[in-house]
Length: 278
Image 1: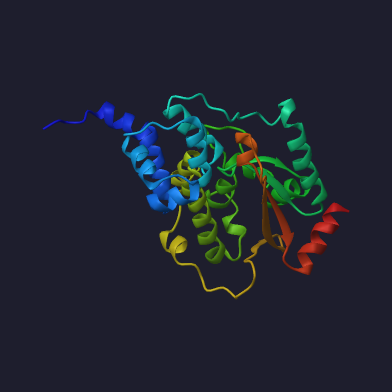
Image 2: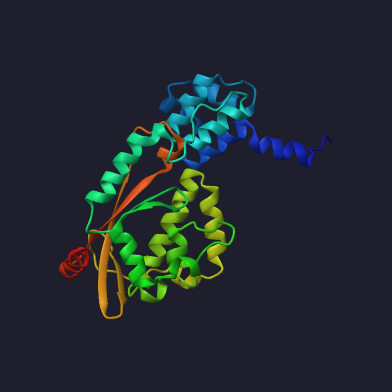
């Protein structure tokens, strides 16, 4: 009986057939479903997953589009099949990102006096407006230093802000309700987007969490959105989030960038932020 070596097993997980099948299963589609969505034959999908056929570059892009594979992972598909990656990951200060960054800065600035941030798919804060910075300073001027990841000094991560033991949990008055929703949202995004960095963040923070809290949310009133409610030094804040993304991104960085705009959930919070701005 032929045995598969560990090296070949590792290679299989990096090969195009494995990537195609794993993403199809991640999207909970049958081969027939994918074939219909991508306008190819089911037989061809089967041959690609088994390795009996090799994909063209156009076929890779066609299938990855049908499966809504993030651009970073589409590059992985291309490399696995022997092609060069085509989607660039430009830094935010790249001249070709000027229009994107101008749009992001405009959205953040125009949202004042309320907080807004731009985050990547691991919930690292890439940009923030002045009201968000004032909010975190109000909660604790040294908050970011206390929850910093030693491996990534200077990086501000939203999951660490919520779920690190030294984070804002003690100030969140409806923690039992919002914590499960935030945690499960991060898990879903990490799975749906193939985010290994987010999975690492979740793995690290999981050791500090009460499993009963994360898996049994409190009953909440049937409101359109559940606000985040905080209290510090007598000041009470209630906020909910609206998320915006780029719909036609052709750059990995832009594809992974999201704008989270926080809105006041009650009149008192609105007045507080307007007063802080004044």
